[in-house]
Length: 221
Picture 1 (cartoon, one colour):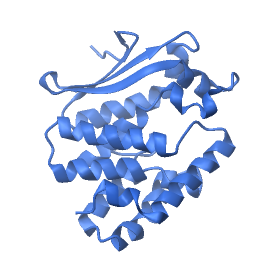
Picture 2 (cartoon, rainbow, N blue to C red):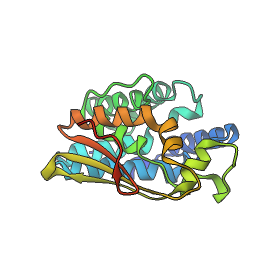
Picture 3 (cartoon, one colour):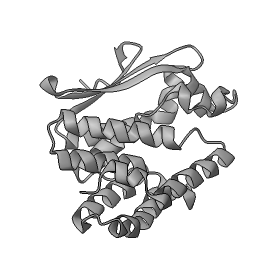
């Protein structure tokens, strides 16, 4: 099986990730480079591992997390679909079986909340991992733009983790924010992403909870 370590060594994928991150930096976006894709890869892997999925599916989730943003090297708009098209020949040339490639490109092509639809466990884990990445370390050079709400929100987040509580059927994102921003401003940016996380968790047979400063804020009861 092609592993995450193999993919991380691939020259084409390495170049695409870095090109996409440079492009988004020029547009004024937060970090989308190795720090972001590393977080997404680790979190996607952990979600499926904690839910008891096979080692094979766990590794595919880790790979999908690492490669999910390569389409930003083409354009931010519909970067999920662009990334899926770019990845198919690269992964096949590496020797990955077609069925595994398809699972990955389906996940990558559907990780944007505007158009994405969760249809397999790898896609579900990727969606939650990607949409949950909010943290002060995503702010470029540690200097937030005070006029940019994305920078303000990310810079306010001191701690962020995704916890799988399998016994209670919950995937919980736990965030600690300071007063640099507010929960209201966070929701103004992340509401559609939270909705996608809820749908992805439901696909995995779980409930998604968003807990900010000790309070669950998406309780549907």
